[in-house]
Image 1 (cartoon, each protein chain N blue to C red):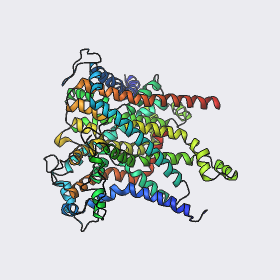
Image 2 (tube, chains in turn brown, red):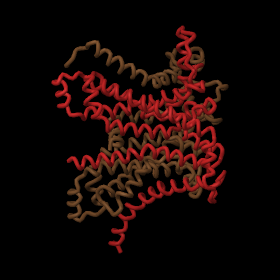
Image 3 (cartoon, each protein chain N blue to C red):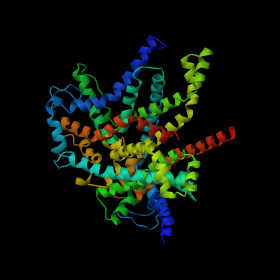
Length: 285
Length: 295
């Protein structure tokens, strides 16, 4: 409305869309390849237009494709990831909401120092926790189970969710709390009646971030599970590191990689607004 | 009796998760640090061995290469991500059309795991299948793009993939910062006859400086923790030319089964993280205090 398309404007658009193309390149390539046959890709390169729609790639990737000598496709690993991500997301979010409420509104002796230590968990490298977790999991007899990953991601995620929720709840006026106390509402009733109804925005952000983070996590998955118990990120590494001597089924593998990426991409495209909000909330505060 | 339960239950709900979390943060850190001073090999032992593991870790070539790589990778990844992110944010801020579309595109890599990112880029960088072969097939047969199999250049492929993943994040935060600058300042600058270039240099850049520091610290700690991306993209190779500190830890702990040395390497990783985070912590405190005294 202000300026016409002067040459400078063209340059701006050229740079912006040029970079957008670079950003989209891997996605485009992998989507196209998931419809190309191995022969087709072998004849040209990984970058090219599909001659037909090789739907077989998708069914192979889902149910028959061999990953580390097991030929059941990516499906069992996707199921493992879901079995891990759903309980871990719900548990870590619920516990984080309650802890965030306790720290910011209920207040108790030592709350700031406890909060500071819990938040350190956000920055602590996973490598510092690997051996202790391995030993704890052995004691709990959870070695090589999906339950172990649920436990780890709940404890680990609690630091994130507490940080998110506390930073949100701190904006709720203390007067509201005082009024509730005058009315005789206790810890749980105040949370249930006053805090929770105000929470949907932060809970959506937290769930989205926990889901994405846990689904995409790799190190714990690959360290604490093997074979049939692995989440999909750990299983995908077997694809990435296929020996060069093998005939690589790029079409099928593209479909498999895409399947593994679809859940978080869907979350992003449908919850993008909240995704961004979590980003700024988590980073700027 | 009932009353007591009503008093007791909130305490349990408040403290149990917090105590588990505190135990996990403090306890696990102490545990791994302790193991780093023991002669633990395949199994944890708890005798005192002093700095033996640290000396062993620091003497290996892996560690030396990993930290040299981290320096190059950290500067390349963080620098490029921030520069490109800032430029894109400034360009998007020029009241352009399709802003939402572009923002959605720039940010989607953030939802993609590093394993997927590394896998797909490893295909594109593969000279026999990817970009090189594509350009060759267009007729430019002498075109070479084989960094991923070149010891001296493979690290740059990791930088490219990491920048691809992180630019949207930097752009989003910079854009939020630019949008929060007082629009009156913009007008005042226009009245003073300051062109857009001078506006961004003199007013906008200092205005987003606090955000730039946050972005810097967040990206630096990502850089130090980078693991999955390298595992999927180069596996640390060719040879060990693209190994990073986080891979060295994993290598000691689970490939060589040397828990003491692995722990020492993990503690070194934590220390390098603290070197980045501690100044930031003091900076935020300093800023908070200054804001309080200023008004």
